Length: 500
Image (cartoon, rainbow, N blue to C red; front, side, top):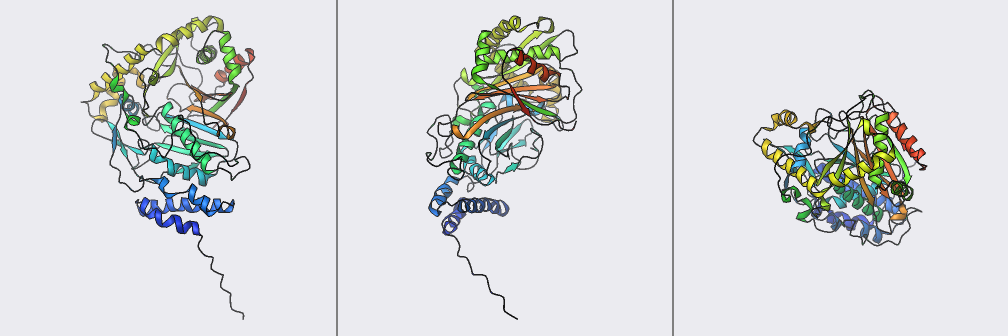
């Protein structure tokens, strides 16, 4: 019987000999998580070698110094929540939490090995995101946690609750599906502005790692985009980026913005599955802007008008106010680079009887946006939140929520009818634009409101998204009809109807 021949030993590839010994100095995590990071490197190296990159180029892209000291230093920082962040957990009930999601759609399939490495390199730049929610006696707070932060293939429903009660759990999740990269955030850690800064940086870092390994991704871009709108993961974090900017707002007497007559709700039975569907209305930015200008209004005002008209059609109520909550970025009044929550809300309201035609309601909407979204009303709302938190401080955390809910009805969704959050225009470095198709932005489901709307623009691509908590299609069907009547070309995409 012939002896089995031994397989020839394949010499270890030089790239591992260069990278892996140095990794020991950059990673001081529990054994299991250290192995996960090393496995990330191993998969990325295999991918690059299969795609024909030289060892020199692989070592350059995966240089261990890009990890910085993040995985080597013990977590010592913690972050007190600002007034807005402290109030979010008080509004949570079992299985519900304030989440939002931002996505970028690339022109090539996402390569998970490189997306994971992009996160590994980038998380050090966002220390306030590398945290977990902890419970103090009086308030929740964010505690730093050094761990292997992971990406996930998207399989579930968008904006499903994050299990933040688990020890060391992430306050965000990164998902990928085909050509889409999505980041979902617990609103305690950041607002839409901070979330988009994170997604843009993650996208730019991913595209750096993916350079030249796909036909669509030709070589020739610079190491990192020379664009102030995209944060470089190699820059050191600045203390101003985690500042509580609410402390710098002048306190006013009285309260503002958190109480009032409940808003009229859309019709339709609430679904058990939240959300039960997500829809996207995709339009040309130039055409939408021109249509808004015909009404002498901004794009936000125009879409609010469409929502008011659709809401009147889709409710069984005969009177009462339709109140649409519009987040306002306070950074434009108090210049800031903070990633923390730095936004408040303008409540745009029309009585059902006032909602007649677009021509008649648009001047009222535009005027309210101008007046209610101005600096003084926003400062008054911040002032109210600060004083509310101060008043609740001596009360133990476990009885804060019922007390706050009794005093301030805003902790529920009854006060508002809908939400419209307009992220505005997203700009990416010129060298990255050809590899990106679009962005979208969705709000997590609310407790009572049947729909929540958000929109974002990239290049000439506007995506207006509706998060549904009822299968009743009246609201979105009327939106589609109104846009069609205004001769706007609209492409409707989105999820199937989830089980309800």
